[in-house]
Image (cartoon, rainbow, N blue to C red):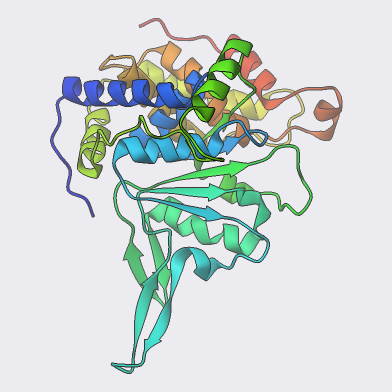
Length: 325
């Protein structure tokens, strides 16, 4: 476990503001996605990233790990991936005639679960304990994961052949679902230019990224977030939003209490990235789509009529009166 470095609000903000600027130089045209990923790191929340192939999902994860200066592992999820391939297993040491634990790739600070929906449910479930309890159990022995620990999982929204839907229990463990869309024309030109200069083949353009944080500083900034001022009216506002998602139209399921907890944690991180030591309603509104879109299950009728979770969230935010602080 990493020790926590004591940081002031100002010093922590300067570190993470610099991190956002550095990532923006490599991940071009995805400012919102970069901000949401940093919010996940600050709030110690796992992130589900969705986008068609070639939009920079892997680049974003690798750039974050490189700039954060922490241990990074990538697992390519496939239909034959087994739980032990993620967590590790016990193996016989012939020299000592005893079993020793071989730790799997999950023992890192940032884990990229690439195309998570290509593995069967039992393998996806291997992540549940790690995501919720920051530990894995091998042969009955609980082993703590290093701190900080977050999972960045990617999935392709259009290629459904050979995929398995994520269980709702696992989807709910992700703090945010980040959508990566096609870049604007000027940004796309910059991407092509940046990725083909001084690179061979499909090398990721990470040359300009250098480690600017440590695991201890990240834990220290996460600690700073817990000291932000939260007015009692913000709690009530979040609860009204969460309850409204369950009652809107003919949806099958809305957000649960974990959605409200994550909405507050993400709003707190957003306020921090805006250099504010307190939360305002706009922080909640800004992060609500990414925190809630994967917690809303539309009915078949609403899907046929062309509704999306983001449309429901937009309507909910308009209908729920924000407090005046």
